Image (cartoon, rainbow, N blue to C red; front, side, top):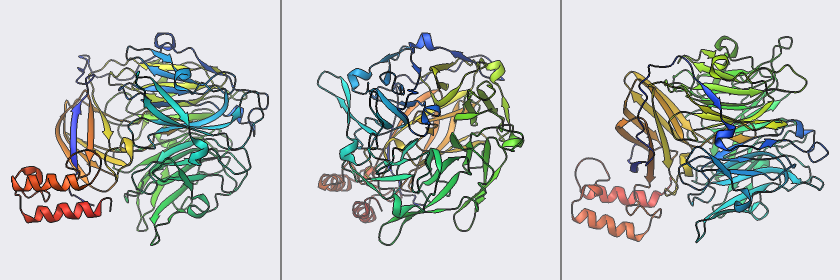
Length: 589
């Protein structure tokens, strides 16, 4: 692990430093369905007359969350399934949303499936990828996916998206067949740019696509060379996250009808070519039957990431949700899992679809929420499984205001009102969008970390790939910020941590995706904290490494300024010049 310092800039946002409430710790959580108050009147009613292929209208319906105008308030993208214009709900910061899809240029009537959010060109504005089968009123066709590039504000402060998928090389999922379900962004090759993975619910081989970002708004498809033949898989939810500690993100795929798949990222070979190896069976991923949604978190606080997937619960076929607990990394770098869903109390959620994890009660551990429902299956309420800290869960839904019987598909969490607790939204299949505001009253403390890495040439934007370990008293929690993909959508990309009684976090370690580690100490809770990182040799903090940084280093050195202490030994000498030159030369190595 590299321990050389990365230059860090920290600031609290204006909406931060919110007080904790004075009530005693709540034993549960409370949610209020707040569609009317939040001005959300849309619904999802997909085209049932041939707009979709493979009967995917029956599985469609997602939602993606992002701060598209970079104002610090989370927005939502809601597809409409070809029976109405897609919606872009922009958060007004007053508890309401306004649909600005037309102004932004995303009010398309399309046969949409999954979507994901990421900043592909590191300009500070989040872009949007949408899997699509074509426009309403026409026949479905291959090559209809959209990559909406966020153009930022114009001279009047108005934002818009521009679809660049064809020229970017990501409008097709398969060259001929009309395919595509879920999608996710992540830095597969650790070059600082966000790459793209798209899955298929398909009988075609090589249905999963990996597109590598070239840094110029174009992508190259490496699927055939990088991953083993995926065979005939029906995949919904892809995840890109490092499971074995080598910084390179693994590829996790939920697989309908069969066991899901786990691929270890081998990193680049001597020629610089990337590859993955499948370890599904060897890693213990052997007990799921119909993988739908997925979420990854450290549920028992052992520092290892676990993998939860929704399934169809049946007692006769012994199928249900799976909670693959990470038991450790073997000598080959492979994580080994054990399914503990039954003993943990999270196996049954009916016909499961979307799921997400987060600390919904801010007590210091990750809870699980999931939605479910199918027209030919008994409906059960949304699940809200609260964690006791040891990965034992209790369903709090009956007392949390979550008793509605709905056919939920997509599910995503966000703190839409910046009050320090997590809300969530459900895209109901053939029904209204359901928005649930977290109205829990307790005195638990929280912290939200907004990682700003776009000025660092070696790090992916939005802090993706960063491993954060927080110490508060006897409590230690570790999480990795990865693209928070859900079923056909995405939750907010920000790190939300709960701390229970602890008003001060003693220490927070940030292991960035280049292996460097920086530390904050004595951090106050109940605030939203911007943590901006720069390359250590970027002394001007302008996102580039050039001659002006050299001039600045010489000035600092001649003045014996502590800013020139690159070795961290408390003195400024020739060793610091040597280290600075090494950093400039190595850049992202």
